[in-house]
Amino acid sequence: MAASVTLEGVERRFAGAERPAVAKLSLELRAGQTLCLVGPSGCGKSTTLRMIAGLDEPDSGRIRIGDRDMRGVAPQARDVAMVFQGFALYPHMKARDIIAFPLKMRRVPAAEREKAVSEAAELLDIQHLLDRRPDQLSGGERQRVAMGRAIVRRPEVFLFDEPLSNLDAALRAELRVELGRLLRELGATAVYVTHDQVEAMTLGHQIAVMRAGRLEQLGTPREIYEAPASAFVAGFFGSPPMALCPGESIDGRVTLGDLELVAPLQGKLTLGIRSEIVHLGEPSEGEVGFSAAVVTREPLGAETHLELSLGTLGDKPLLIRAKTRGFDAPEVGAKVRAALVPAGLHWFDGDGGKRLAGNA
Image 1 (tube, rainbow, N blue to C red):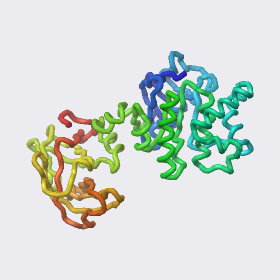
Image 2: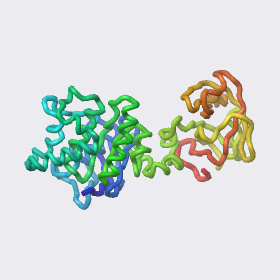
Image 3: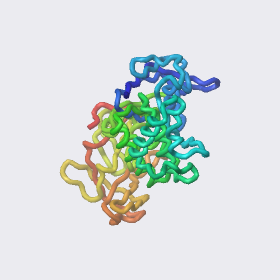
C-alpha cells in the first residue's frame, strides 16, 4: 500500500565540505503521488533520495514514511524499492529470475512469485523477454526489467534515481510516457530524481527545485512554470528556457535596447521573458514593440526557435527568444521588428533573484 513521505528539517553534511549537501530540507509527499527532485549536479537531490532509502543517514532532522520515523531503520526494513540510472541486472540470470529475485529472498512461494512476475511483465509489456539474459536485451528492455524487479515488491514507496538518463532521446521519451502510466495504474508513491525538466513536468504531481543543497521552490508543475519563485527556477524550466535579462528601473521604467517597459519597482532587476509571449511583427493593442537582431536560428520542423539580440547592458548581452511557425523565419543577422505581451513578463530582484510583487 502506498504511503506518504515527510522530511522535516533534514540536513546532511560531509566531512571537509564547505556547505551541507542538504540543508534544512522540509517537504511532504502525499500517498499515491509523485515528487520530482530537480536541480543541477551537486544540488543534493540524490543525497536526499539516499537518505529516504536509508543508504545514508541525516545528521539532523526527521524522515517519516507513513507514520513511521525512519531514524535507525535499515534500508531493507523500509519497504522502499529503488530503480537506478544503471540497470544493475545480474548478467547470468534470465529476466524472469531477476524480476523474481526480491520475492525469492523473502521466501515467497514459487507459484506466487511466478504470478507476480507475470503481472509485472504484462504491465511493462515484456512477457516475450522473460527468458532472455541482460546481454540479449536493449537498453530500454533492461530498464523495464529493472522496473519489474521493483514492482513485484509492491513497496510503500518507489525511489527513482535518474532511471532514463542512460537511454537515447527517443527511447527516453517513450519510457517517460510508459512510466507515468505505470505509476498511475499502481497508485504508487514515488520520489523521482532527475535533471530533465520535461520528465519533472510530465511525471510530477509536485516538483521540488533544489540548488546548492537548499530547496528553491516546491509546487505543482503549473506553479513552477507560471510563478517561479526565483530567477534560478525560471531559467530551469521551459523549452526553450526563459530569457533572463538584467536591467535597472529608473523613474519606474526599464530600457533594454529598443525595448522599454514599466517596472514594478525601482532599482536593479532581472526581467524574465518566455518565448511564447514574443512574436515577430508590429505590436497589436496592449503589446509593446521593439527592434532586434537575429543571432541564432534553430529550425525544428513545426516551429523555428530564434534568439534575438536587444544589444548589451555594459558587457552583458541582452538576448531573448521567440518562436515562428514552420521553417519560415528570418536568417541569422537579419534586423526584425517584434512585440511582446507585458502581462506575461516575470520580474525578479536584481540582487537575490527572488520573484517580485507586481508579476502577472
